[in-house]
Amino acid sequence: MRQTLLGLVARQGLGAVLYRLAKGLLALGRLGRAIARPLLSAVLRLVPNHQKARAYYDYLQALRIFPRGQIGEALKLLRRAHRAVPDDETLHLDWAVALTMANQYERAIDVLEQLSSGEQARTELQFWTTLGWSYLRTGRFPAAEAAAKQAREHGVDGWELRLIRSLALAGEDGWVNKDGIADVVNRQPRALGMLLEFTYYIASIGKRAEAEELLAALPANNRPYAWRIVTQHSLSAGDIQTARWSLEKLGELAPDSVDELMLDCEIALRQGKMAEAVDKAHRAVAALPDGLEVLETAGRVMVLAGQREAAFQYMVSALAEGSRDALAGGVVALYLLGQGRLADARSVFRIQRSGDALACLYAHTATAGVRKAEGDLAEAVALAQQAWGFWDEMPSWSKTEAVCQDIVSWLTEIAQAAVGADIKPASQDAEELLSRLRQAVSMTEIR
Image 1 (cartoon, helix red, strand yellow):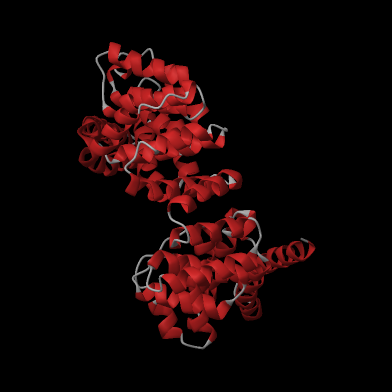
Image 2 (cartoon, one colour):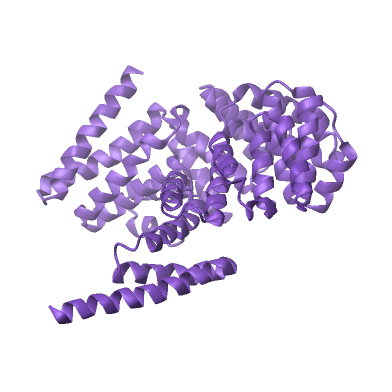
């Protein structure tokens, strides 16, 4: 009993020392956080119920996974960490910044307004820029301008605040300070991204004349690129109307360009105009046959349209140009597996590949197919289950009948092999997967 008690005291003492060390490292930036994370992990092994160590470990984990696209999980971790240490203004501010990056501006404003009474917050440039930007992106233009002025009253200034003030005036009064905006953008490359995102926003709320005036502040040779990005912002937001309008502006500056063709192709996809999308994709490749982005996009179109041979050819060309797209890898690997070329299919994934839900659907399906061909049915079923999980994450316009039939065919074959082999629990998981696949097919047929 005494030895157990002494051991507990020793663990808590060591945990307290490691926690203080980790907490001190957090203030040293990225390198400090990288060192602090394993220290906090050690604290939790020694003292599992150490609430503050858990909070800061969650905080660092959130900062680590957010850039990988695990936005929902990162925000949950940040919220939990904030609840455990509500007085940490740095953590509080990082939570708000993450909310703005996830386009959750109203929630970010709530978090920042709670923080506004903090002494440290009032002297932080990031606090004022995040608050001002969130006001801008929710149409509260006078509040955004006021935030920029308040920052200056607290001795805080920066190009971000000057740009926010100019954008607020454009949104509220329609007056565009072209010289001021051009000066900031020329001096600070990151300002262009803010300008283009805001341009999309005010166009989306009907202020299209103001949007045109904002982009007129850019040098003439940069405007086609700017309209391209605004169109892409519109597509990402699912705003087809604004995307079509901004694409027309691009067409006025660069008629019949490859960029115009590819964006027109993306709009056609989202509108369900598959034949039009296929035609424009072929034309874009003909105009720029070695363009990596063009080949990847054309391959994606062919996948959605069910043109497997064309999809394979375009994706092979994309891989030859150095593509790391998971969709390109998945499409090529599945095609090779269908020809019995296991070694070639396996080699496609020798490098790390990434992509959206559609890309992950194909890449995981291909990897599951490789494992089945190697005789590892348990791993194949596990990967097949993961693959099908991406189906639910895909936007509705990309859930075409061709994709459903293609993927369901591969995953059904894998699941049936596992059921036939009667390898528990893989066979039980396979039965469950087969049920989900049948349901998806029936829903697609109804649609």
